[in-house]
Length: 616
Image (cartoon, rainbow, N blue to C red; front, side):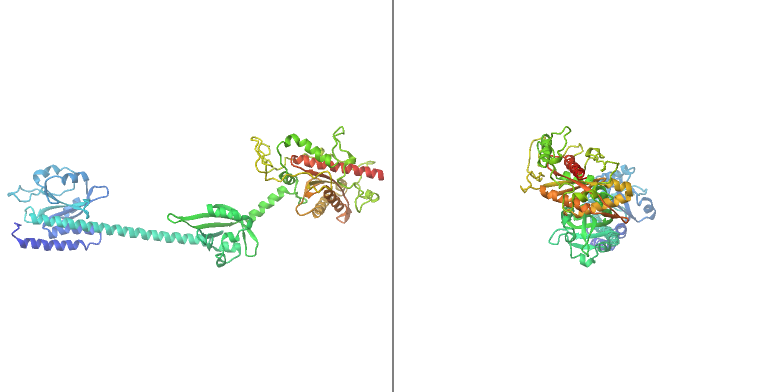
């Protein structure tokens, strides 16, 4: 019998306890540690059966290790007992320090609960401290640190000698349970660290694979890719580029790294680049090649950010859109220019003229007076005719046909239109209204309702407020040619004798004549002036900054440039030209401006007919 007067028993038990605790630290995994705990109880503490119940993440306890009986081990290992059933057991019986002893006299009520157990039948004890087969002794294991977190429960059975453990045996079992808890905590920590290391290694492998995938996608992308720095003194500097971008810009990778996109972008596109770099997104702009030419590209920026430090760098995808831009420009040019002569067409003419005009406050009510004022100032409109006819003698804007420099009345008949009917001497002239009506001009300042959304002086009809005027109003020059005033001259040109050329020689010859006339008109004006083909054999010239005398001189020069013979397919053909000068003025519409110039052209054509009849 174990008593306090038997020191050799305590010493032997302490030696065995030391040995089995030492073995706890040699286990290499959590499962090995649990089995070592169970084996140590049987080997070193003198019990025939030992079971280790481990707390699972859900709180229930599972039989994780068993020692002492292979049949019992096979029967209950892996089975689970509810946490509530275990808490009930740990609150019953007698308390032996941290141990819990439930004698068979109380434990019979536990035979039907769900805690896995192994017991054998046996006779009733013959003396007071004899062990009964249905007695139960549990040693709870708590996590180190004093938090009372339950890690598991060690249950033991059949102490050797058939007696209940004395105070020293109880103390040894309790000490062993504490060491077992430490070993289990360490084993769990090692297992968690191993899992973390495995997970970290997998993440690093995935990161390396992702970086390799990104590198290959970056380097071998068919379109340009670049990484630029964000923030700091080197903001925008290109850190890395792929081969496609180097080929696109005709520069080596080392050379490109000396630049930023702001160094390469076209000066007109720098604002677009800065907005795109700051906000990310997409932009279309031009970048400089090594040969100083520019290429249209589409930039798509992605800001790669760090959650702590903010934006780190800018990933830019550069796509060559030069061909698309070229096609777009060609389409836009075809839509706004005449396919035969290459001159701006009627819609483009109206758009350019409309951009110079505005409706000033009250312009609707004074429009008619504005038109009349211009007509009156330049000798056209008197308002006296029955149909609002123009006074032939009052037009002085163009030198009459046959009286200009290098031209005389004698030779003028040579340039007269080919007769179209016997006895007429002239081809019939169709007034402005007889031509195909003009389509509604493209007006960038118009809204879908048809109203002019742009008020040149900023006047808002709904509020009556007129803010600062950023529009330079177009005003016709004064009636006095010597007052030095300038305006936007609108020269309406109609070819004389062109219909006869078409009828006699065919449309191919007529087209060649139109092309040559367009070239001569373009040659005779300044770079900033506009020469447009209105349709058929009608042309319009917009020349800004001219006075009345300047406009008349320009009309003479252009007419004289058209008169010389034009050689087509080995033959020389001639056409004349009649010019009417109108003036654009804010408060007038595009149609009113064109009609005014057309009517003056009609006056000039009729006055020339009169001169030719008198000379005839």
